[in-house]
Length: 122
Length: 490
Image (cartoon, rainbow over all chains, first blue to last red; front, top):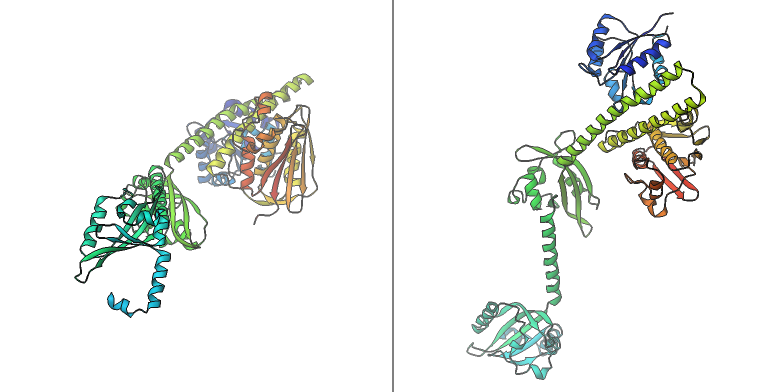
């Protein structure tokens, strides 16, 4: 069975680590980028099945990462994970994201429940 | 004169005199102004007896309130053989005053010299009184209009400016003399919130003038000053209705720049603060779950972790409420209405949230609902309303009590009710329940937890959803909140 790879662009190291642990526990390969610049750098060198993007990050923020994904026409699903208020569905749709999740409202299990539908069929 | 009166028959002359005596105060004086004749009405109004009047100088009726120049003009006119007419304030015998519209004609000799004076007076006290009242009311209105900070502009029924107040001049930076007679659109271009110029035909004042009803229009947009700078305004335009027709309009406006700046600062602060508060919450809750997956905890230890999670959830809800209110006041929440079956879309998630995840581990919850509760609403926003009301119920009822949530289709609407076994809301405070920052006095003593914004939020959201929230409460049986949801949106 193919091992899915997920990029976690998240600057809070504890949160990133706990997400990473959870995904690895479920048999995925997870890679953490602590800011947008590194996320873009990583995306240039490696193909991911799914990208989790925090919006507020140093150097280059999550909007920058989503812009990059849009420009490169990369078709991997992208999910916004943020603690900003997810007000309208339109906002994240216009950023090219498939979904937006509020981090403080979900456990690691909820994250898995939400993202598993976006992994490409095996 | 002589020719005319010679033409009259005796009966006709009698009729004239009779009508005159009924309607007017008639008197005759000699050249010095001493009264030689007074009709009944003159006697009655003056409150003197005829005997007291005859032979007295007309001066005894003078009020003394009018300038000497008026009487000088009167005497010089009649002495020169002409008729004088004017309004005179007289004083009756008892000191009360009355106003008379007075016409005095000299009685001329064959040589055309005055030999006496004939006067006819009509009572106009009431008219004078109304004039005074009008003047007083105008002075009051003028002073009010000068004192208020809102710009006020009046137009006639054609839309031409007839009045502006001091604040208008100050806010717009234009003198009133430059705007009279012009249309508002010539003086003050109006832009909608999208920055588009509103043509005269679509300006709110035009709508008010053409609708021919008494309804007012409230409008938000921007005005452009002569120097091309723009500022945000709120307008209220009211028609002036006279005899069932629109005779003009009054427009009151306010420069809202400072308010908007303040609101934006507030919203920016709330957005930033909630982000900063949510990040540690995320770490706490992830860490608790991660620990549970790695360590086998005892029952007691698990309960402690459950308690901790309750606090995380509570803080989470406070932040969400704050954000939702900020969005509602900012006007950035637009409901996404969709047809839904609330039994499936709402009750199942409520069940897992409150019963399976035990968000409030001490309270008992029951959910009662039929298979189908069809309506058109925004389920996510409706959920916020229920969460706010349930959160409210948990704070204001004993920890071990039951909260009953039920849904019913009444035929005309969907009703969701949340019943607690709480402390109730004191009757004298019940009309304040939905006010921002309101907390009932009986629960302020019991619990310090609570912000007083949850129910305010619930009401605001239900307005967006075209429904409402009501409640019944007693300090003995607790409170039932009922959410009313329309089945369709017209």
